[in-house]
Amino acid sequence: MARGDEEAFRQLYRRHAPALFAFARRLVGGDHQAAEDVLQEAWIRAVERLNRFAWRSELRTWLSGILINCARESLRRLGRLPPLDAADIAEPSPGPPVERLDLEQAIAALPAGYRIVLVLHDIEGYSHDDIAQILGVEPGTSKSQLARARRALRRSLEPSGNPALPE
Amino acid sequence: MTRPPDEDLPPALQDALLALPRESPPPPALEDLTVSALTRRGLLGARGKGRLPHRWLLQSAVAALLVAAGWLGGRRSAPPAIPASTTPRFVLLLYGGEVPDSAGPAAHAARVQEYAAWAQARHATGSVVGGEELADTAITLGSAPRAMPEAGETGPGGFFIVEAPDLPSAIQLARTCPHLSHGGTVVVRPIPAANGAG
View (cartoon, rainbow over the protein chains, first blue to last red):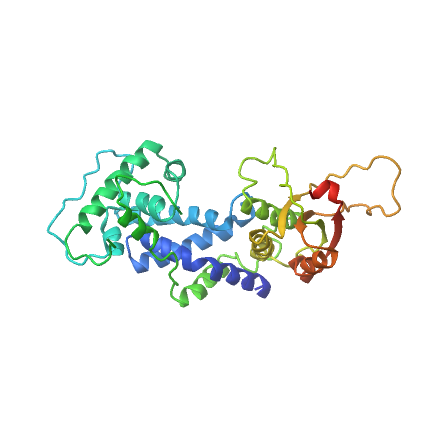
């Protein structure tokens, strides 16, 4: 093995892995093992394609795109990702009030289709056009999914006494 | 990140989402596992496979600066003029400094990241104000100067434009450029005030 090559990769890994791991964990709904698998697969694909990266965007953005695809494939394999284009995806039932459900848990509990759009838009700052391109849907679908995701999130946080939401 | 108020997202919830931690360290063992997986697939230490051209390195580092400055992203054909300033300006011309032949793609990427981090940090403080990549094509017109590039050489691979109070300060800034630590040469040349300042 070329030591310099390995060390160079380790530098890249250490710089970007903490943010990518947090991103992956949210995308897969808090499943730690799945997030590890997604992160590792994303790095493998990234190194495979590194010489195709045109450097017209930031490396983190490029890595995130690969990570999102890996996360969606993982969710699909686990049967947790219905087609996002289905505008009539059933909204989650309110269910019994959940006490002390913190924000991360509430996000993790969203249906995967909602969660991905919410994480991309409201946490990572992607635009609807970006999300539409990444997920292969129309921008309108991204907007409607986000609206539903937000409603579902608000509802899950409604029980009184939730400490995660500031006044 | 700021957004206009959104009726679907109460301000308190918007703030809470934006306040979520953006980083979470993966298990330490995952780094070694990932390196092992890459090695098994021949993606690390594979000499001569998938390497990138040397000039790409300098051009990419400069491109990374331009991305940071918001100058790229589909607008390559019409880069904006460098904004007016009264501070003296200098051009740093980057020569040589190629990544060794034995290095793989990750080594190239790490070098670009190093250059980009240097440029972006100084762009944030205002001392690096611009840059541009230079293509390999070099057409010489008129009488040949005394020092022509040798066959196969095309001169600098890129340049940075920096602001500094005076030439010694510009030289001091140029000394921090990572290009030097990789065997490259940086030539500092003042831009006359009539062209670059005021």
